[in-house]
Length: 290
Image: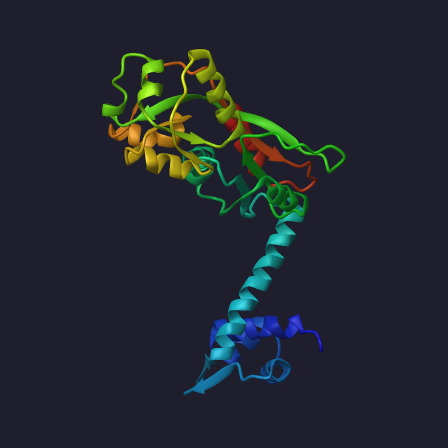
């Protein structure tokens, strides 16, 4: 199968945008007849007519609309490639962020807020397990990973895990579920919504052992969004950083119990050494550290 001629594709893109062969030829500084030959060769290569003549103009056929969509993406990717390697200050490549699937959506928003406010960069978000995210980081498909755990990378490509935030883990619930006089009484009386995240789960087990209580677990959840939903619905009291339930706490539908659990959740930004790193990443990580 012959390869696509991208020179022909560029000419097609110009004609499609102009809607007129003569204007496109003038813009490209080629003769109209030469341009017409280039378009016919591309149509022969693709096996479809790309234009329909309407009056004195050209209108894209269905195949032409599909071809134009692909052409715009192809040449857009080429511009991104040039900008990335040139480290152009005027370029705005997307920041590709991976997040552990269990990570709080509110925390992800908090991390990205400075970039969203700036409005200069598109953000590509991906969630998944640590193995898949690290593979994407190694393959240059991600610029940074947000996580609550430092990956074990013994004998593999080097990474940097920057501690960007830490938040105390607290006990949250609907107001009527928190009125028990002490932490021990509360944990004995109310069912608990417990994240499966290792640091929180282990810390909660140690807390219960110190208090001498045997809690009733309403749900073990690997998704902080579900922790938030179950707490809001009154399915139990939850053990989580306050950022997870920030909107409900602000609205007063959920409150935080006044007890120090002695558990801290640490958030990390994991990146790999790059010669051509994303221009916004260093500033974003610096803002978090500050």
